[in-house]
Amino acid sequence: MTEEKKPPNFAPWDRNQFLNRLETFRHVDKWMSKPDEINEVQWARRGWTCVGKETVGCVGGCGNEVVIALEPTREEEPEPSEEAEDDDYDWRDEAQKELVKRYTEMIVTEHDEGCLWRRKGCDDVLPASIHRLPLVQQATTLQSLRHRYESLTAISSSLPSNISTPPTLNISRLIPHLFHILHPTQRATPSTNAHPSSSPPTNSPPPESSSSTIHSPPTINPRALTLALLGWQADTASPIPSIATCETCFRRLGLWLYNSSPSSPTSPTSPTSPTSPSSPSSPPAQKTPILTHLTPLSEHRHYCPWTNPRSQSSRSPTPTDTDLPGWMILQNMIMHLRPPSSPFHPNTANNSNDGVSEGQSGVEGVGDGEGEPKSKEERDKERWARLKRLKQVFRVRRKVPKEGGPGEGNKK
View: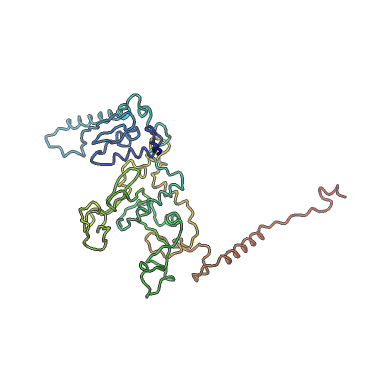
């Protein structure tokens, strides 16, 4: 048997390895937030991983470990007593700054002299931040969007309805551009929102139990699309089904905090369930939501390139007015997509989902308003007729030279 080839220990250009190191800092019982100069991104860029409580190690390199011990900040401390002197707090602030400065140097110097991570880090070999989202290739970017969207639609019953979006994000404008991306085969799927002209008779069995179900155009879930556009997807590895995660900053969201009623995988409509509320396979039950609304952008970590223009910048480490966060770059890419013509285009279907705009039909093959599609032979005849008319408009007759004109003198 051939042994599986292990990735190299030193690959500062590899974004996937960087994200694997960064993911080790996600557990709050092992790593608390640090100042930007020594946060988890800075350590991961130099080959460090979180190996214990407030401890980083160069795994696969020199093997050294560093324990980070900082004084608690004023926000983390209780309010000082009236007897506390301001000079004491000023001294502690200065000590904190010195500690941060020392740990900033230790990110590099604590590697052994012969360790390659001491010589170069991720951002030393790349023109842009290693954390930057790869949004350059359109096909890969849209495929990732579809993957996030499909994972969220699988837990659609757990998605909160009170989602706050940025003012410049208009889901209804994006849906026509994304319909063929989210439904690439454009096949009709069973739905209770069928078109009135194709609804089954009243005495027919319900669609769920009928083997010959009348199909209707596929729909788009606007809540799942909103979260997917802003960098979130369902955490399929978690035993709790209603958790969303960002695979760039590794923040996790318990969606049951924003729902008025929990979703039970066993019996969503029953007030009681065999699964206990305290069971790890189901979220805790509640009658009213703990949080009133979900703001997906603010739930990312502050350095996440989905929201941080500096982390997504490819030119300089200092932010400029032209830098955009990842979600805005993705939105601009989608707006430049051309919605294809299709019988299942949302503008030609009676789609009752929120956020799906209704407009005039520009689909080829639609009849004269009777709802009867034209045959392929009729469509071909119309195309040839249009082509003949165009040829007549642009036809230019060749001018025949007169006798005795240029070039005719030598003819006999």
